[in-house]
Length: 343
Image (tube, rainbow, N blue to C red; front, side):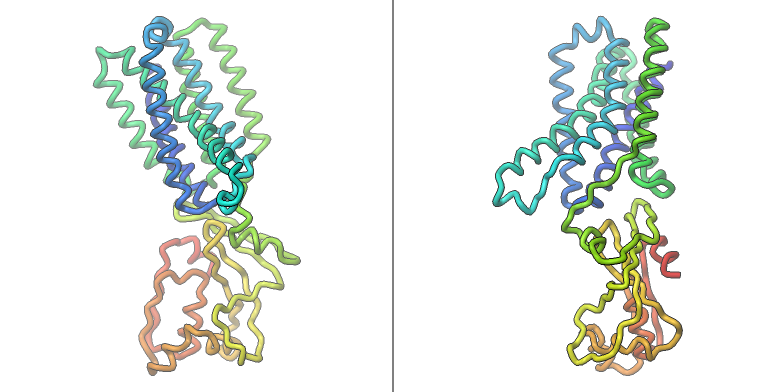
């Protein structure tokens, strides 16, 4: 029974890891890099099928030993391979001029490929070993994958991405421990010790996301007296609120404006997509600059219009609608975290 629970946990971790990597790449790079993870996962599953086919006879003779080894390596690789990938100086903006960037990209692929290869191998050898119970194995594989796909989204509502990665590592270690119950006692004790030491290392030496230097958050953090006031995370995005005396955001501001822009806080989604939270003390006269930006044109064409704002962000467009005496203002923001921060 323990081995089937282990199969469930491995399936859970693989799908969760894939979705988590897509979320992380959206933060550190851009969303289109997240789709690379799908190809890496497929490569890992394909390579594992070839590996199982070539070494099936040897693996079946020592199934529980191989399953324990591969599941343990899988759990370790979840954290370790991602940590190593963060050290690769891959810069997509240099790939046209510096061909060495292709080697860095290959390094990304190889490192992120390893966990999928190891996890898929555990699933593949289980199908071969329990061919008489294939329906049960297949059910647990699909169930684990489905629960993992939903579970990781729920986890990201409560924990930041790197904490979720640590949780998936723990799930992988648990699957290895369950598989080792079929082996000798000293193997189980050794694996418990190795798992404890590994997890302790991962826990006490936490990772940091290596965000691209070209993202708006990275650029803003170079401003004087800058500090991150708040950071919240969910599947919808990683939100950072940044403070600096130098932050003034008024896109399209006319050169005819001679007043002052009120103090603002910068709000970033996934280290990019900047909007601002403007200090508003209920004095509309302090928002005069909003009449000097290009988006104010519709308010000069219509008298007291009804306004619908899709993606309210930090509330700049809402303030503009208030300043121009709109008769009705409806604002929609998909991320409740942003709404709470603006409040």
